[in-house]
Image 1 (tube, rainbow, N blue to C red):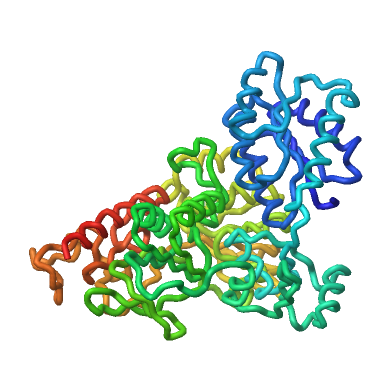
Image 2 (cartoon, rainbow, N blue to C red):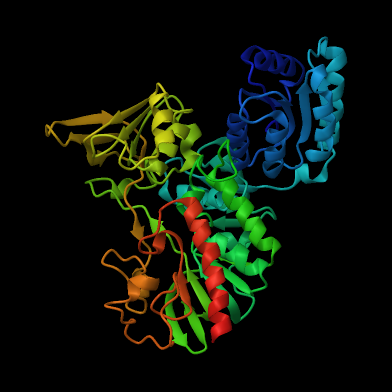
Length: 552
């Protein structure tokens, strides 16, 4: 299979090159051979392959690697490509570890180093594993295909939606031979793109996200009219609430407007989350949390927008944008925050065509050898810069302040300072952008001197500010001046409970001004804007939900 890969990872560059050389000599005409020199880099490569809808046939990992050893890597890799065959490279002294790995990661084989001559000690093993992989039925499963234009905002939106919902797909340009053939076969033309061809062969021209979700197997309609707990928002707080609510027996519904994971789901690498010493991507963390919630039978809806809450004792009605509604005894608001739009002339028309909000990780390979610009000085911007530095020739970070110390974690600042192709530009802001069918130039201004320069670039990634997604609440739930939901003691004024408060008790810690409606994560006034705290608040909200249900 031309798209299938054999991936090898070894922290010793000479060994890594030697393994890759032997693999390419034997299999290079049939497989792509990819090498990495650390477990974390290899996992990043696997996730990129997954997003492109391609396959990995065999994984070869050295046992003794710092940070993440070979067994730990293979265990993590199973989440991404569970059908890939797994081989551990080990020295004679580590054979006991290799034998134990057979049970831990369902190891297919272990090879002792050195493997010379490869004709006797390497190729026969790989031949057998590749034959076994090729006969695995799931390898030949149909794939979703997306046909579109390179610089089309709508084409980007479709690809981004699929990627953020972890739906594997293959991207084809409409002006290339294979893309044109698919369009012709579907009876469509370039004017109809983006076109999505589903795994059952159905062609969707310019689909809405709701149509797309329904055709790729995502639930869009609630199965019931009444739930114990409805969670609005599928970021870390919402996923935390869904996991804990469903695991404790509550009939739980999670409603997400676009894609689970929220802003955290777009993070290329989160390195300060408990339990992941080598870091974890937002997509991987989201995928695990979503599968965990579904394991406990939490119901998850995608592409459904909640536009209002209405109290009808003893339940709260959630009204959707299509005028339908569901009822729940309790609600957790976990809608998070969104990136603030960059207000500069010319940028609005170029959104999705060179101007992107958030990491837009699917664009990273397209930035190879080019200079890109990132606006923002918080952790999300730093994570994006580190990730894109592996592809781009140069990454420019533009910040309004004097340095990164006010808003970025120290570990990220240290990483950025150690990467040669990242440059931080303090006291700099974007004041304009230009381009025909895509971004071609940015105008930058030095805030101290007033000096204005124009730089050529096709890439701008914006990570500025945060605005709570609460306008839809109106005055039904009390909010602060910035739109964040007030909860608990923040609702008390001079010891008095909020107007219209019916219970004979004060609001619980995470409870809003509407009894039985709780807020968790970034949407809550005074919350700590970190993934771990959001997950914790989601879990805490469920404990308060139980108290509320018991006390009615």
